[in-house]
Image 1 (cartoon, rainbow, N blue to C red):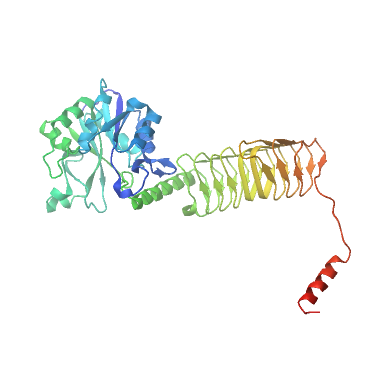
Image 2 (cartoon, helix red, strand yellow):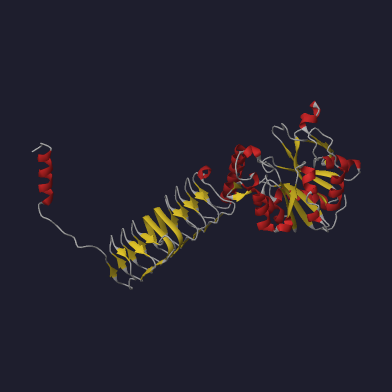
Length: 454
């Protein structure tokens, strides 16, 4: 085969299935894997492959999928398949979106979230090497109902046979069809125009283009990916299995990069979790989307992080919760049962237990006592609390925002602080302590007599 010059790339992502087996009001392709909708994983892969034009084929039955695709790619990137008449018909629904495009077209699926750009890249390599049509296959441990790839030579493909139509010899084949392919746009549309619906379901199958291509004498080649990489989702059980595979992959990548996990199977990661080498993650930690953890930090057990930044050497947890906007400074400590939301915590500051810090800032080296609350919400609006550097907030202090505590200031334990505190001052808000001598002894005697005990 001769090598062809680089050409433009486009992608058609099929997302029109009803997903009835999911038994969920959420459309199948909007179910998340690693905290990201499956459709977005497919779009990510296409864009990582350099596809300048991405078209998502949706069904008329799912306005939510259409809205999601349009919000990310624009209305012009959405094609509607109505009625649904098979995978070949679905690709043809994108014909208008491909108008004027000259180059290679990738056909992929919105319910295969583990399929990466790296796994698909060999198809474009086959095209560059002279193949007219390149198909992605996989070796199945249990081929079952998968379509079988009837190969010719090392990587030639003569046809795809569905399991229900296969002979005993063909059923023994373990090379299976993923459904993903790459072809020149004009060739693909020409072949699809020849596909018929003369089959039991009366549908137009994308797989028929392989046989038609061979009949036309064009070159059809196959590349292989791992079975887990092409795994599709059609049920909640399959979604859970794909999520488990995603988590295992991400943990392995992070540990290979130098992240310590003492019980990796209990750590839950998101698609965009960034953890630097030298970070230690203890058991049962959840990283929701939007988390960055920098070198030397420690994330202790049973902590939950979302939309947060943890700077070098900080210690989080155990049992801590970082919500969106939390920015924990270098060497700072956020301890057990402390919740931080939209607060910048300065270097070396400590909030070691039982506190809520919401909206504002905590200066470097400040100490937040147990039971401290940033009272940031009046039922309608949010207000900020700002704690100066080296300040000391006594236990069970309620700071009623908007408010500031100056550098080096103290608040007395049990205070409700409603006015700004000057630097280096002590703010107290308590009623005077009263004492009644002998009251407790008299009380106990009265109670014993009432019960006939004295």
